[in-house]
Length: 95
Image 1: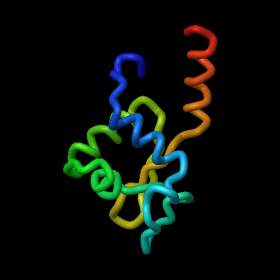
Image 2: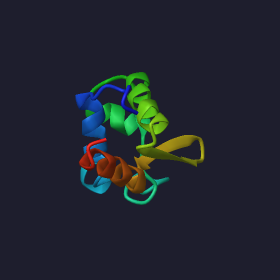
Image 3: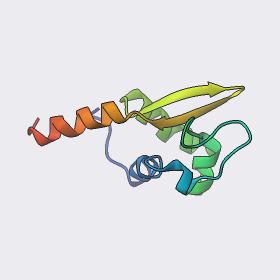
Image 4: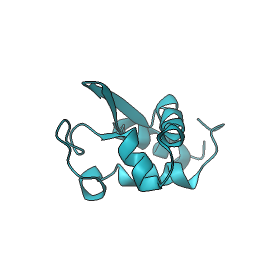
């Protein structure tokens, strides 16, 4: 996780996913607050191609800060609050 450089886009994604209903509209298949948000929705908000958003999301999933959920043919992303709290505690302890 420490090898993944901080990036403003990834920080924005994590911030938006704190309260996804405030930042992303509801969809027919999937509630942003309950299920998460698609890569396409995040790409639209970032103003980048979906592949760029998927790269950022993939890094956040790989380091454990986001969880995924498949609904139909789409992948939805949401924060892993327990993991984020664990990481925050490690940094508070000076690790």
